[in-house]
Every structure is written in C-alpha cells, then in structure tokens.
Length: 489
Image (cartoon, rainbow, N blue to C red; front, side, top):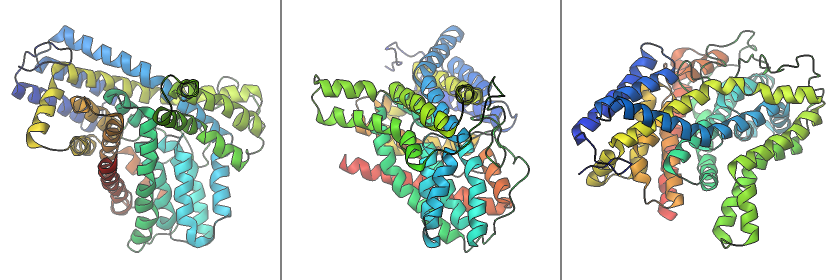
C-alpha cells in the first residue's frame, strides 16, 4: 500500500504517479522553454497538472500548493531578503570593487587567475550571480587589457568563483530551498559547501582557464557601453528568473537610490579588511553554531548562545546591521542613502521570491501526491545512491529548463523521502549534490549563457567551449567532492 506524505493511502498507482510527475515537469519545461512563460506561472500550472493527474483532486491540489508556498516563503523568503540587503550594501558602497582591486593590485601576473577566482568567490557569498558578473566583468576586462593576459585566463576563474558559490553555499536561493525541503542543517550545509567549493573553484577556474585559453585565445574587448542580453533579467536560469535589478557595465544598478534619490551617495570605498569581515560575518556566526552543536553539550549556556546568534535569520540580520555601519556610513553615505541602498535591494528579488514560493508549492504537491515515495522505493530497489539520484534529477531538469533554481526546487521535492532517516551531514551532502546537478551544462536556454556571451564578446561556439564546459566541470567535480566527503563523514 502506497502512502502519501501525510500518511493517507494514495489513490493512484505507482505508474500513474510517475506519469503525473513526468507530465507536471513536462508542463513546466514546455511553458518555460517554448511559450516563454514566467517560471512562477509555469510552476503553478505544472503543480495543477501533477496534482490532478496524480489523483489528489482539484481542491487538495490547491491546498497542497498553497501549503508549500506558505512554508517556503516563511522559511526561505526572509533569508533571501536579508542576503540581498547585504549584497546591495556591498555593491553600492564600492566594497566589491575594493575587494577585487586590492587582490589584483597585490598579486603578481602569474597568480592573477587564482586571485580572481578567490576574489570572485568571496564577493559571490552575498551577491546573486548576475550582480557579481556586472560588478566583476569591468575589472576582469581592465585586468586583462592592463596585463596583456588572455581574457579567458582571468575571466573563467572569476566566473567559476561566482557560479560555484551561487550553486553550493547559502544564503543563495537554490541551496536555501533544498535545505528547507530536505530538512538539512544550514550551518553544516554551509561548512560542507565551502569544503566542496574550494577544489571545485580551483579545477573549474584557474586550471580549466589555463587549458581553454589555448583553444579560445580571445583578447579583452572594450568596456561595453550597452546592457548585455539578459542583464538584470535572466536570473540563473530562464528568461524571467529575475534576481536583481538592471545593471550596466559599471556596476551601478538602476533604481538603487530608493525613495530618497537625492541622498548622498558613497564618497569613498570602505577598507579591504572591514569589507571582508562584513561579508563573512553571517558565515562565521552560522559556522560557530555548527561547531558548537558538535562539541558543546546541548544544555550548556555557550551552546544556547551560539544557537541564537548562529540562527540563519539572526546571523544575516547581524550582517545587514553591521554592513549599514561599515559599508554604508563607513563609505560616506548619509542615513537616507543607506536606507535607500538596503530598501533598493528588495524590488529586484521579487521575481526570485515568487519562483521559490511556487517551487515550494510544486514540491509539496509532489510530496502529497506520493511521487517521492515511488522514487524512494525505486532507488532502494535498484540500489542507487540518493546523492547520485538527486544529482541526476537536477541535471535533467537543468538541461530542459535552463533554470538552476527550478532544477534545485524540483529535484529537492522529488527526493524528499530519500532524506528521511539521514543524519544531518548526509542530508547536507544531498543538498550539495542537487546544487551541483543544477549547474550542469548551461546552454542557449539559460539567460546566464547570453549574459556571459555578450559581456565577453564571444560567439555562441566560443561560449559553449568556455562557459558551458566550465559549468559542466563545476557540476561533475562538485558531485565527486560530495561523494568523497560521504565516504569519510
């Protein structure tokens, strides 16, 4: 007898449930790729097809979807908003420029690819991918032209640093959604995600960059004076997967002034040390909580204190408040401009919040229909690793939709039953495996593909050889690292 997630007997057979899942996913894919529908609407309609074909009926389908939307927004939406605020302050204060310029100025030419990868990874912790690209690309182009280095030698490491952090490390939307769906611990996932990120950035960044430069020996174009295709609109996936406001090549985002457009802008860039500390503060607090949970007794006062300050909401809120002082007031902004910078970060994430919410509804419909139990039984029968299965599901959806966010949300919903009974490190590794799969082979249905192509002045073929292959390397190396960690944890 097949039971749903609520313990009720499922009304549909295994075959019908699998068909319902395939039709639901196919509906999302077709609506996004062929009809160019916004992923928010596509996920709603895909959930309707899934629930009705799967035997839930119209009213229970609506109930499941709205339940998933509410729980996802409540647990994930607040973190995304706070993370966007930190990113907005980092961009508007010039802190991101300070990090990159300091690293580049102090590193000899031969080590520049490694420095660009490290700087991009650091900037990529709080910033969404597109904003990181917009901020870093002018610097990458200037570095390549100033040092006469091939563009791909410094460009690929920067892109790898941004992409890896976006796919593996909270507070980015994909990892947050998967953590919530699978019941993983955010602190442990963050720690393991950073461990996976380091070798992945190295292989996909400086190592691959030095290799592909021989086959795509292009020079840096002049700084773009136009907004590239997809900038500020594409998200890490399909057209309409919005993550940040529009941006130009200088990194100045339109509409960042908020309601007080006459407020004084930043007059000086914050210092390197204080900028790095501000970016890492939420990460350090969440890691401290994870360490405390491992080494301190449950009822001890130090552990309870660490659990409070390391709570993701508290940690990110502390990062925002600290950043308002160090990055905002510290860069010469007045209070009105600081408020405008923080508030101006929110409109641009409305799209991604809606997609994440609808994805949570789709995930809940999958669970309530009993699809996850079918997948879990099948995986146990064929003795396939849950980590590999999560990666494969995410890869398939990523290739079909072009959206890393949609791939992560859907894959997490499908493999939820596999996470039952997992200890916290293993559940965190499942989150990372799905994140790795969601980055596999970005191609022409991914707005990020066109963003990179336009900024670097490449042909479609050159973009596939560089960007698409780099994303595939990230996906595969990330999975390998996850599987290796699974052997020792």
